[in-house]
Every structure is written in C-alpha cells, then in structure tokens.
Amino acid sequence: MKRGILRKRLLPLAAAVLCIGMSACQGGQTASQGDGTDMQSELSAPTASTLPDNSGNVPAAATIGDASFQPGAYFTDKYPRLEFRKEGDSQPLAVWWWNLHRIIAPDDNGVTVDMALDMLLANHVNEIYLDIGAMMPWASEDEQGGLTEADREEGFVSELEVRGFVKKCSKLGIRVAALGGSSGNAVLGWLDPKYNMVHMKQMVQKVEAYNADCQPDEKFYAVHFDVEPYTESKYGDNRDLRNQWTADLVIAARDECDRIGVELGWDIWAWSSEDDLVTDRDGKQVNILDVYARECQTLAVMAYTNTAQGQFERGTDLELAYAKKYNTTLIVASEYTKGTPTSTTYYFSPREEAIEQNRQLRALIDADGYPKLGGAIHHLRSFWEYMTAGVK
Image (tube, rainbow, N blue to C red; front, side, top):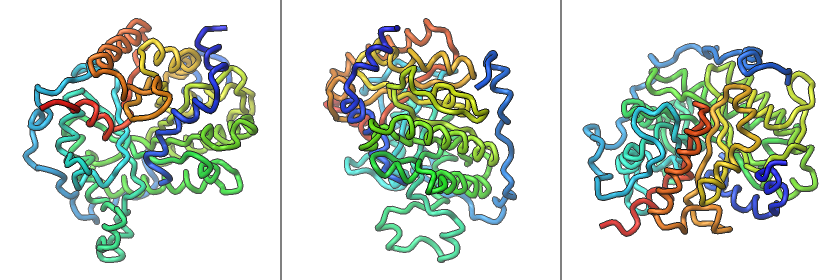
C-alpha cells in the first residue's frame, strides 16, 4: 500500500471534513477496460445547446470596472507573486470567486474588480470558478422591468453584469466557469434521489439560458460543481450510499452538460480510498474516482496542506491514475483561508515559504510529465489578503 493511501485511511475523518468543507461553505447553496482515448470516446463530446441563440434579443453586456483598465495598474511590482504558473504555460491555474457582487462593487477591504483581476493576472491565473447563485437571469429581470432596489439589497447581480465580467476576463485571457454547489447537511438536497437532482438540473438550465443570451466571448465554458457529500453529518455512517448518490449525480450532470455544450468540472476531497466503490453508467462496480474522472473534464482535488509534497501526494496518489486513464485535467488545489488544522492552509505560513512550496509543487507536477496537471487557489478574497498583507 502506498504511503499516501495509508495516510488517507488513518487521518481522522472529522479533521478532513473540517478543513475540506470550507470551500462550499464560502458559497453556500446557491467502467470498461482500455486506454484513456478509447474510454473517453464512449461519452459524447459537448455539443451545441438546443436553445436558440437569443443574443440578438438581449441588451449588450454591461461595462464592468474601468473600461480602460490595463494590467499592472494596481497589483504592481511591490507585491510578491506565486511562481506556479508562467505566462504561456499550458497548465491551468484557477481561483474560486465566491462573492458574485464583487464584480460590481468593492469588497469590505475596498478591493475592486479591476484590483482583483490585476492580482490574478500578475499570478498568471487563467481560470475562474464564479459562483452564480446571486445572478438574476435576464428573462426574470426583463419580466419585472429591471433589478429592484430590494434585489440589490439582497445581493442580486444582473446577468448583463455577469456577461460584462466574463467578456472582460476573455479579453484578458481568463476563461470563466459557472460555479454552484452545497455542503453540510444541506447537500442532501442535491444528492437524495427523492429530490430528483433538481438543484443540479436548475443550475445547468440557468447556464444554458445564460449562454443562449451571450456573445461568444461572454459564455461560460463549463459548469463547475462544489458538491461535498463528505461534509454531511451522517456521511461516515452512510459512506457507500452517499458515494453512490454522488456518482449518480455526476453521471447525470455530465449528460446535462453535454446536452447544453459545456464542460463539466467537479471539486473532490483528497481522501477517497480503494474501497470507495460505486456502480458506473454501464452497471459496473468501479472506484468513485473512476466515475469522477470518466464523466468530468476537470477535477479539482482539495489537497489542502501547507507543503508541496503533502499536496502532491494527497492530490495524485489515487487520483492521477484515473485522470490519465480518461485524459482528465487534474487540479491540485491550495488553501489560503484561515482555518484549522493549521497544516491544511498556507494562511499561517510565511509568504516566502508559501511561494517556495508553490515552486516545489510545480516542480513535482513537471517531473510527473502529465500535461493536464494544474493548480487552483481557494479563494479570491483570502488570496488577496495573503499576498498583500504588510506591503506598503
């Protein structure tokens, strides 16, 4: 048994749930044998949505931030940078962007959308997972004659503003996925079959309608789910059942995403074991990681620890073989929020140490040679605070 697998099995489940569950809490609710190429071909590639193009009937996207924004205007050379990804790299570096309202107004620290984007560009982030739970669909906004003052007070953001943000990101070389999901006991509303996967279906339908309203450079390229069954209070007593419900949800989500022509991404914890068996779409018993990797184009492993070696082991010791089998992008994600155990986050690490660990993580990825290994940062606000703390 590999050392990483043994560690996974011995680590107390409560600690794992505590540290990993931070992700969805930020956003709230809102197999056959053969090589990877053969297996991937068994699933249909994303196609065009069945909804007609509605972009000619919808107003132009809103202007977000400063229309004349130029990279380097805010996140200047006085600020340090991660050295995980360099310009022109094929590997992705993503960030979770939980607070949608931040695209139109500064956060509590006065950080504007342009300041945030400038930091991401300086660190060569090229993907954003954007929580769209607070997005008001255009059809609803149009029907009621625009966003009301009450809508604004409740934090709703116009679809036109989201389109403007995605357009701006596209111009800057950053692609955007629509993010949604759940954690804690509320996750049962996503998983329990008695709810007929309504939350997943509504999420995909929301993205379908959004993309039908958009110009090409305003579209979401993917739906990215952060659905965390392992944070539910009774997961430990019902692990096999919850895993099967999760596998069924992933399979159905892939079919829905194929139907509307977008990719599917999923956040997964780093503690799956060889014993986590489920039934796949062909009725075969496989590891749940086989289902995740077969059905999703991207898997973001919440491999949260404050060392490169620890992150790489947690994120790849079981997961990488399945990613290679299906040619899936595998993200080894990093945590920057304040949390416990302290070893799960870079929040308490000296910045120079975190930067060095990121260098080492990239070296481990490069040494493996799989071209679809990347990284991600959880999450936007905490990363800004971490990278700018103490800099005058």
